[in-house]
Length: 337
Ligand code: NAD
Image 1: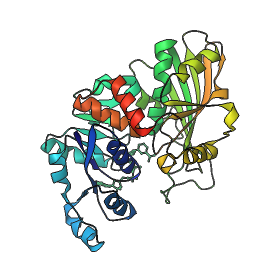
Image 2: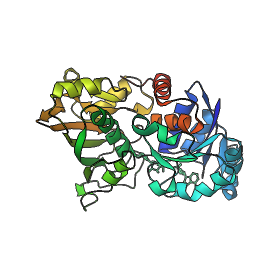
Image 3: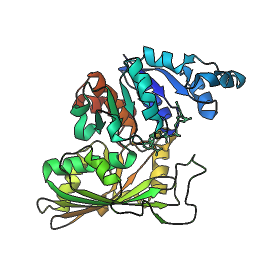
Image 4: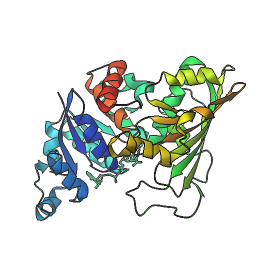
């Protein structure tokens, strides 16, 4: 069993903890938090040993009636791998701790690509992370774009990608985020930083991205235009995507008109927290005009990176190849509606 430590038990960390626990070849050694709150209480209720991310704050947990298993350094020392799911920039500060104990680490998309040996998306560049010590699982948006670009590149060739990312203002729990009554070009400069981030996954990809922020919390929405190297029928693209385990093609018959109904469907289907681990691509939107492909896809920012973290654990520990890991992760989580 691969012993996994999770440092940072928030939106991403708590989902990764549950996903790791569901795997046949992994166990959660413990999770680390900076302060007691509802998530700390849930961690204890679920039976995850809880470690103090900041040693001086250990007494705060005791005051809240929460048992602490020890300091985070102890957890890092005993683990085969750490998943750092702390807020942007904190992962970089934590790197020296992981190096001190010679424990390989995964970081999240909020960290800089320069921090790590390689950035990671299971479908696109699993092999780059095999036996690496420091790996960054790319952001929700970059994950969503990579999953679509990889099969298109392999099958038809990609000349140029243009994507407009309509991003949720904040996650449902992020009460301080916005906008609450506006539509923002964000960043206002073009192209946005998202394109270069996708280029950390693919060599020689030509991609320009534009970002916006809107008063929504449920999901991001991508409007995508991919110029392929050959003229392709939309039906061929639908068939290609239909074979991709982490692309969910929303059929017209479901009458899912947006993120609201998508999330409702995920909840009805019994998904934990209403999570949608797959890209949700509107099948009817897949259209071609000559070599130009167009589509809309919804990206559930809180969960699409979760299976990717699980696969990155297997890549870094050298315990499975891409195909086996993706299959195991998918089966254990129930990926595919
Ligand atoms: P979050 O704020 O929900 O959770 C972070 C957790 O880390 C919190 O519980 C916080 O208390 C804890 N923490 C803070 N400082 C810490 C420290 N020094 N040691 C240990 N824990 C500490 O954040 P999140 O949304 O889960 O984001 C985590 C990372 O994942 C970021 O890099 C982010 O960019 C990336 N990411 C977020 C999303 C998303 O939409 N939420 C999607 C993809 C990637």
